Image (cartoon, rainbow, N blue to C red):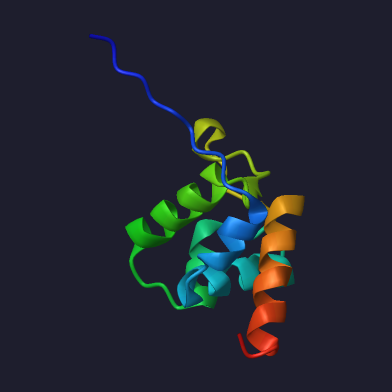
Length: 102
């Protein structure tokens, strides 16, 4: 029997609702200084484990909240992360809710 996988489309509203403090720290670092590599983002967000930042960035990219605009590993270059319009919207909504005390 063939296995089928479904890609769940999440709305920006859903993504914004599920942002943890650590995820929000990474998005804030990307918003403040687009084009940073994994190592710089980990330092800015206080993440010490190299694998942890890689998994988090991969998850955010799958949710289409960030995009890698660098050459990446395939080209032997560093990643360069930027917020997508969807990521910017989700981040702004989360910040607005946090400021409003929700």
